[in-house]
Image (cartoon, rainbow, N blue to C red; front, side, top):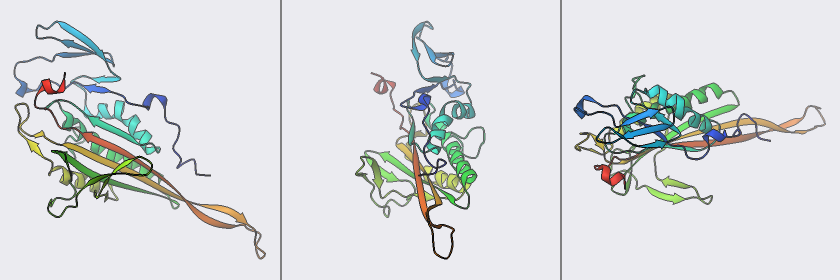
Length: 277
């Protein structure tokens, strides 16, 4: 039977399905003389105020973070349980949605290399390699690889392939089991987290950006980062007696486990009216 150490453990009920978290962006100096229109009450309730300052409604979510929340708190309190599920053999997806200049890319990517300001992506990468380094042994091997795709004007581009003329065309294909994969996408394999983060930083430089009224370097494309953790455990099975020796003759069998996490930074919208109907 498969080794319990490599088999997916039972997924906690609290982390199944879709969960919605709202992070309220703080008012910045560039915003001028305005106040925040949302107050966070407890962990799940948002109080929205109108232009007159009066309460106009309340909304509930799985989790709410106010403008003073740090990058570390967002990861530890809401994202880490989902990452732990992936590290235990389950697939997952985390994506950021919001209007332009709402802080999506800051939350997802942040400032890589700055311990306080780096976003979810570098923290997830470090968690993957920490799992790989702790679990590796003589008979258990781990491999981490990553793809970085950009969707812009309904075209898919591989950001690991910087030369667009030479880069292969990315096509979406459906496997027999119903899953979808990007055929032709580069799978970057790195042995250390620092090497992977440098590779990601280089890829991010080629993402399409543009100037808007809200953000002069607004992301104009969807960014899809797929991290895959593969583990392979070699174990001995069987037990056939031989004439010369009474010790069983064993055969080596490999047990593989593969899980993925998609991290998606969606493009911002120029107009709030286009986002909310």
